[in-house]
Image (cartoon, rainbow, N blue to C red; front, top):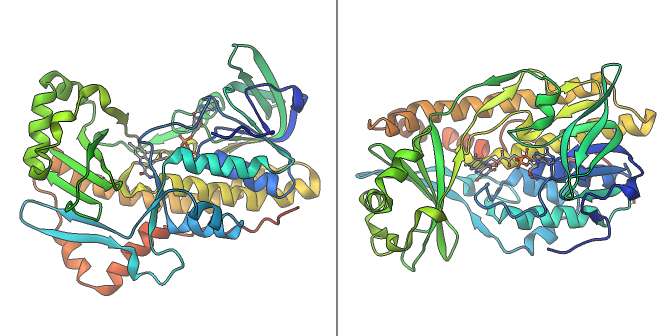
Length: 417
Ligand SMILES: Cc1cc2nc3c(=O)[nH]c(=O)nc-3n(C[C@H](O)[C@H](O)[C@H](O)COP(=O)(O)OP(=O)(O)OC[C@H]3O[C@@H](n4cnc5c(N)ncnc54)[C@H](O)[C@@H]3O)c2cc1C
């Protein structure tokens, strides 16, 4: 990964312990917000606890809504140069039937597809573009440990660098973009509403061969389900197990797992031999949201405000939409007064809550009518979906919902330079 002049490993010296906006978390939400603020001439420090962006299997889907945002800030061509694969449709394949769930080619849009790009390449591109701007600082290996407060207002964060030394950064606004296990939302005491998820996801890869299917697809089967993502030379595979059930899969051993995979997808029979348990990452799925996303001086966005299920692969894109909405609201306030009031923070929540609730409701419906039933050994309830899909309007709505979600955001902040 390129090292840029504005990237330091937790060394606060060039910040003098102060910035205008301190963003905690260098995931999709934090990185994009950092870029948008710096682009408008606002000083911003992004703190990321890891030393790199190499997080495997955390979602690689960049949807049309995000591709439009990249065009709006002049990064469309740079993104296009990243090694990626364009996917337009997702199929559902059962033992005796198959159909396309959503086909983005029906959309009359500039980007009627989802771009599959490794998340670290995307985050590297965003932070490198941001580091070309004078107001941007990225502190890697900088783990926020708590909030600084004064008379009930959040005035910055305390963080630990790679050597374990504690530092403080004062900021006019602190943004918690530190993901679904957010330290800052806990430190702020913001109440979380947990909506539950019936599954965890085991991620692994198997080789892909000429003649395999093109479209990504879902394959439900009695007691388990697989999502297959075409990555050209390999299949990226999400293997769904009942919540907390991975230890049972482990205990049965790799041979039993290989047999279960082949029973669902016989074409993998000649490839599962290479699969080992150590090569599998298991992710705990959560769906939740904060009732209130802010406190004076602090705003939570992305998964820190609403942890998303992997269903639909929309979490990255919702997180980026939150970042755009945040920048649109706070840049004018910071430019006018140098501070951000609670009214501005409440306005960001009001704007982003509806899309969050709609997407989470859709994810819960899929969990209930498809995943829960499949993991319970029952057939998925797909009749209504198949009947509704006969209508062109429903097909268009499904494609638009997956590609853009409700209330897609557009960048309204000016480029200062
Ligand atoms: C199994 C699974 C599969 C998924 N697949 C997809 C998919 O295919 N497509 C999709 O769009 N979404 C997917 N998602 C959801 C998606 O990963 C999230 O919604 C999205 O990453 C949220 O972005 P974020 O920036 O809010 O948080 P994150 O991506 O979680 O980023 C948070 C960042 O904060 C850092 N951090 C955490 N704590 C601290 C701290 N104390 N100090 C400093 N830094 C800190 C972390 O290291 C991380 O870099 C999936 C989720 C799961 C669980």
